[in-house]
Each structure stands twice: as C-alpha cells, then as structure tokens.
Length: 279
Image 1 (cartoon, one colour):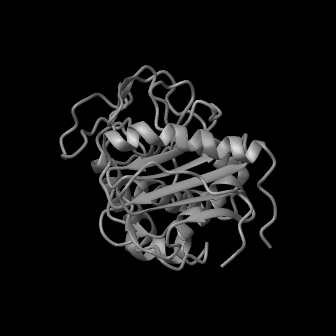
Image 2: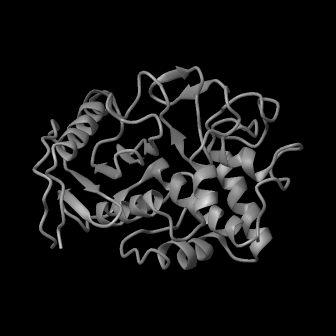
Image 3: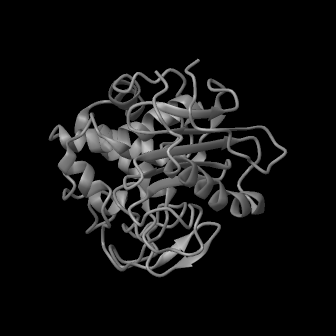
C-alpha cells in the first residue's frame, strides 16, 4: 500500500467506515480498508453523470436534445430541473421551474443514453468509466441513481478524474461543474430548503449553502454528492483536493454533525503543508 503523508484524521464515529483524501495525482490518506466494497447509494449519481458526459463529449448525446417529459432536455435531467419527483414517473413541476432532486430523472437519463448509443447503460459505464479509470472494485449494476457499490480506493480515483478530467474535455468539465439554471430553489435531502439550491450537471455545487455537508472552509466551487448509505464524495478545485467517506451506518444525525468538521480538518491539514508525495 502507498505510504501516506497526510496525518491521521480523527473521525468521531463508532461504526465501521473508510475515509480517503487525494490530490489530482495521488492518494494522500486512506483510513479503513481500501478495497472493502460499500453501498454508494446516491453517490452513484456522479459516476452515472460522468458516463453521460462521456457520451456528450463523443457527440453521441447532446445536452440540448429532448429527454424525459415534454420540454425537458438531457441538461434538465442532469440538473434535477426536469420536473420529476424524487420517485415516480409523473412530473410534479413545470420543466425548469424548480430544483427537485430526483432518482427518476437519472433512470430516465440512463434509458435515453441506451437509445442514443445502442449500449445497455451498465455496459456503457463499464467500458467508459470503469475501464477508462482502471477501477477495480466499482460495481455499476442496479439503478444509476442509487444502486452502485464500490471501494474508497476507487471512489478517490473518480474524485481525481473530477479534479483533472481525462475522459471528457476541459470545456465540458467546466460546464458540468458550473451552476445550471441559476437561482432555482429546492430541498437538499437531510438539510432542508436551499435558496438557491445550485447544481451542475450531475453534481451538487456548494456555493454559499448553509447548512451543508461540506465544511466552512470549503470553497464555493466545491462540488460532489452524498448518499443515504452514509457516503460522500467532494471535489474542491480551489484546494486541489478530493475526499470520500463510506460507512456501515445510513445517513443520519451523526453524519450531519461530523461531516463539516471532518472536511475542515482535511483542508486544514493540507493547508498546513503536510500533504506531499506518496510515491
């Protein structure tokens, strides 16, 4: 296993978990079993979004093409503004009017990509994201909204890709990590209504949200996702860091309490100059 230069980061929990930190080139710290497989829950979405963005980059799918309910596009589905509810096929809002976090939107998105590419979405993910990033443990079966599983080691590899993209162009990466449909309000599950509730293309963007699951020291450009399995993946382009958390307890009050401080501890240790080469 690689030597690690970021000191141990205290995690105030009693349940089994894994924590990892990386810069764009190398792992700086892993605590817990690096190859243990955990449920990713909604952290599946940024992986699925990356697969869709690969199709966009290759010209097989266009962000502006119709997908989902009448008037919606691939962009609306990725940005949770297509009008779908959390679960269910019947829209509950006009397209583009509100930010409604939706599993359905990602399932519709996967079906749309299948039709556009001729690949089953699972096969597309395997060939583009899993093989493209040389992931060893990620399982891209089940719902692209919440069904994937993986290790902390592989989740950090995804984070490195989202820091410095290799599978998509820099231009598309900048668009995907910028606010889409600016000013839309919405509910961030577990944290209540956010005004605005900013998202990119498959990634939640921190901006000035409060309360939030990232830290007080996280830059407004920080983006990522968390899941109901008690998982998170964030990418902070200003700090040049990505971090991931996976655990045996479902998301709840403990995660709300510890995650912001955990993120701030990671950022502080790195700012103190202790994160260096692990080669």
